Image 1 (cartoon, rainbow, N blue to C red):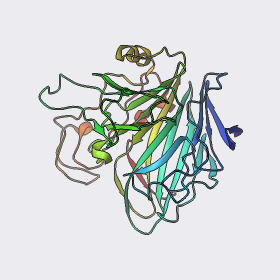
Image 2 (image 1 turned 90 degrees about the vertical axis):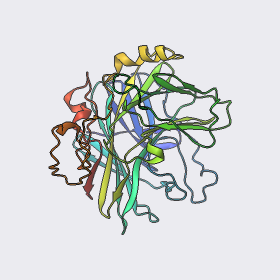
Image 3 (image 1 turned 60 degrees about the vertical axis):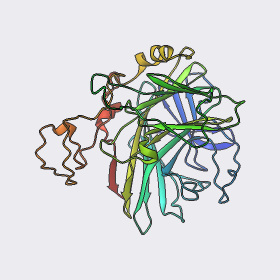
Image 4 (image 1 turned 180 degrees about the vertical axis):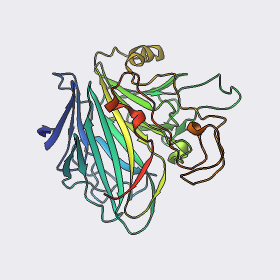
Length: 367
């Protein structure tokens, strides 16, 4: 495809990719960052925050946030997580996809690659690759963070299944130390958690949980960006088992998705997949019912199809890829043999955008 270029804020030579009436812009001089998201044919509203290119406070190595969507690795630690990515990225076209590859960090030996594929009807497929180019194994998880423009609301689905086992807990919620549980930006409901941005609130807030619904959304200016992801059944997740996190401060709100922890050997790459959907003409959302009425008709997955574990799943503990544990429920096997859970099948997407065709957690040798 012929790559178009654009400028987003101070970021020149960004690559502009389009699917239907949704456009994404990706930086090439720093990052990579998906620095622009525009929903609607003529819309000039950027759903991502674009921050001043200034080094982050209390980080002495020159790391700069920039804004937009970035790829990190969890667990969060200073300085490892805060690798500076202030250098130009390599842009590689491959069969309808575009790779945006960072340089290898000399301190950690980690290289990152965000792969963007425009699909159709306002859908995008994003693959996030982390490669260990170092000399020793590293245990980490892919962690994607989207810094959203001020003024919006993050919609986090909870999902519950009373028919399964009413005597056991089925939802978790974690709070970071600086979070005030009485914060007016945080609204806890039975079906959704909603985090509303407030530029007047100085103190940050962060929560995280195990999101079995496998999607999150951010609503702003009558539009929504929905991000879908996959779960690795039986996988170990950081931050007390969080697969989804949300952070907000006076400047932006972050939607954060987390992959499973993996010990990445030298020369190996782990990948984390997402599908993005842009929605227009979304009414104002203040209540859970308004959230359900506005979003459920447009979701690519059945909102009632949560990925609850099968109580009859095998739990033999083997790690053999050719598992022969005798489990009769092969599709729900949870024995550790890397029979990965697949993403939920979309109800309206084409075959090309079918998340069920992608594995939830993948490891491969270096390219």
